[in-house]
Length: 473
Image (tube, rainbow, N blue to C red; front, side):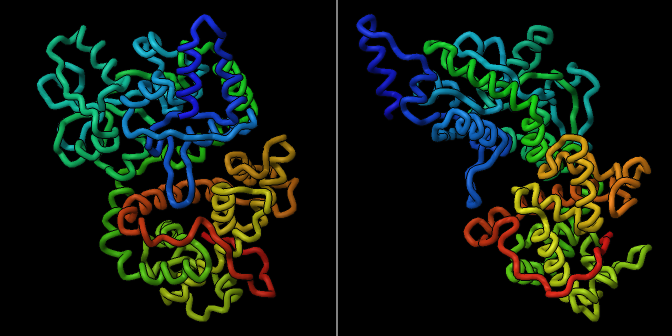
């Protein structure tokens, strides 16, 4: 309200006074007001607190300006720019494409990401080989998006192309409709598609309608470019320092690899295998301060929720504990599901506690997972390599690049704990991130009011005597 009054008063005064530059207004108010979308690819306010790639970026920008961040989420893309133009926000950060139509009434800053625009269909319904084969079938898109602009441009070449626009849904809803067979096609940015295909594994890209579509923050045209220029400087520096890549990895790193068969099997096993162990996961997670879904994701990666699983190297049980780890945890029967699950929870909590205090979430969890798999000392060696390379040893994105180097003589010969199949923990972590993401989606409605634990929470103290570093498989 203060922002609207400020702008309205300045407009009424007209030539009697000069309106301060928008950056000065932000600094005077002590607030940066940002309109965004309520979407996993932009901003989400959950019991864990606000998150999302747009939130992380604008929060860092507000911190640099030394002002408070006020997020103004709207439900639809079509609401974003009207909210900005009406003077209710200083800028828009909502994954907006910099279309020609939008540039006619707002200014865009430096792009911070590039996405591909996909026409999406359901496997088994017939993949079109060209746009001509799409004509006559149902296409539904979100109103007010750049996807409408894309279709309008294509309609000039293919006049018979038709579609339906829906202002009351997000892209995720339309992707669900495609998966359910309710519509033939929708259009999605690659970031949104890569997330949702883990929930709906039958979704496929029919055609790439555009490659390398730039995304940028939007600013009102009437108030000058002082805030835009400052934001550009921030984003350029943020990218140069590697921080932008870390934000992208946090939200999209696990989506790069997709296993269609594996994802379908996971969802099927969620219904057929998980129920018999779920109460054990929940109880163990409560005891050791771990989200039960993360614990279950570890178990799926280890054994596909099979209590009798045995690996070629001799590790056994649903959490695949080695003999040394089981002995360290005081477990006599590591095949027993309850023993294995509680032991795995305790061991993971111990790895989390060993990660340096300077490592923040979610990188702390990813490093603990890597330690669960390859051994904590090898993660320490990877941190050393990152330091030698001038990277950030507290960032998982840098650690994930250093771990595979432990399989190369020129690197493993220089670190205390030597050779490791360092590519394995990177794949291990990425798989668990994907499984955990699907579990969050599958359980969101039932746990909305009962979820009590963060990822990860406070852990119980470890046993007094630690074993030698143990590699989990």
